[in-house]
Length: 233
Image (cartoon, rainbow, N blue to C red; front, side, top):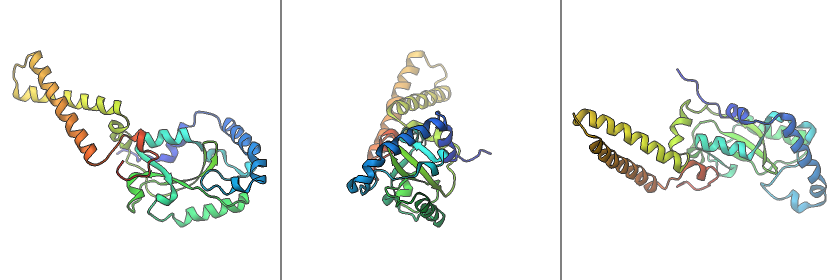
């Protein structure tokens, strides 16, 4: 009954500044660095840092800042990594868009990034990858999206592992609910002290199990892994 989550649409909603403000920043970035790029082969050949794009041919709704990308990755537990770590094939439509942009802007694009769930950087699957090209100064140009949308509840399912604070809050809530039902079923007249002691036991038990599973699997919180290239993170 719930609609699936389209990460591209979420990224668009996150842009709280107007397109004019963003385009102003990008215009300044491109014009300020134009002389340096034209006079320095070393800058132009640095892979993965930025691309020389024609400002007049840019579409403002395809420009995103790294802070916006980071928030989406952390909220939905996604990775934002170099395209070389992506194990599946980029679809032909995406490759065609790259070729079109290169002709349109008269440059050879480089340093591609992909936003996708961790498993897509190891196994072939189809869960909403997004392809970007770096523009410099923390800005990225969106090129293509393919695959299926994310599960509509993914953001909430991943909320407990977003950061340490969320993990502790989730453990507390789950422990309290578990304690309440155990006391209701097995302890007909539980005093406040008994309930509190049972809650402490449940809190330590749930926290220990969750932490053991996380450490055993080499996992970490979403805010720490969104740019990690390592599998056991």
